[in-house]
Amino acid sequence: MTLQSVLMRVLPLPRPGRCFADGEWRTLARAAEVMLPTAREVPPEDVADNVERFLVRGRSRRAWRVRVLMHLVEFLPVTEYGKPFSRMTLAERRQLVETRYVDGRGLWALCAKIRFLVLLGAYGDARMNTSTGFVPVSTRRRLARAAHNGTAAAAP
Image 1 (cartoon, helix red, strand yellow):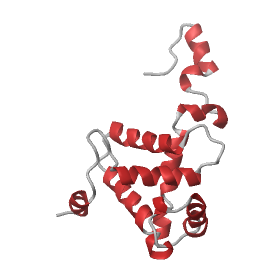
Image 2 (cartoon, rainbow, N blue to C red; image 1 turned 45 degrees about the vertical axis):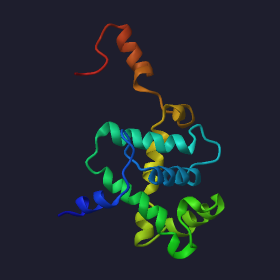
Image 3 (spheres, rainbow, N blue to C red; image 1 turned 120 degrees about the horizontal axis):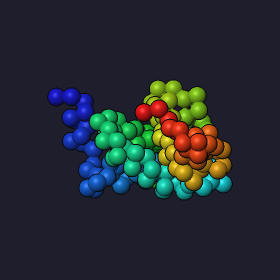
Image 4 (tube, rainbow, N blue to C red; image 1 turned 90 degrees about the vertical axis):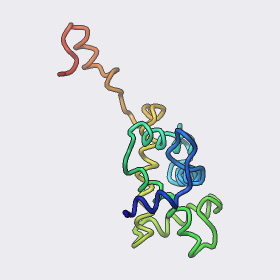
């Protein structure tokens, strides 16, 4: 019996074709609401969808760890704030992130890892290309020049 097998029996079942159970998805979306700037091209719900799509498409065998992280982020605040993360107001969540996740220790430092998922879901979205200055490979001038000259754009 492994930790993974135990947790897979305890974690709520996601709907078919999904990686996250509804509560896990909601926790990630609420974290994105706090961790991304207010002027953003990608809404928090799309950030959660993008991360979920990434995990489903990649058929990650370790996605259960991400799901456990969502539960830790959701329920650890109950110990000090008396309510789960997704039921806190935006201001309360922002204060929690600033006081506990930044330079956090122990479980709080583990919760802070959610920022990597938020960044993956936001900056992996094509709508962020303009604001970040990212130029997709297919539209880079160097590649267009190579195709125009009849040479291979990239090595096989």
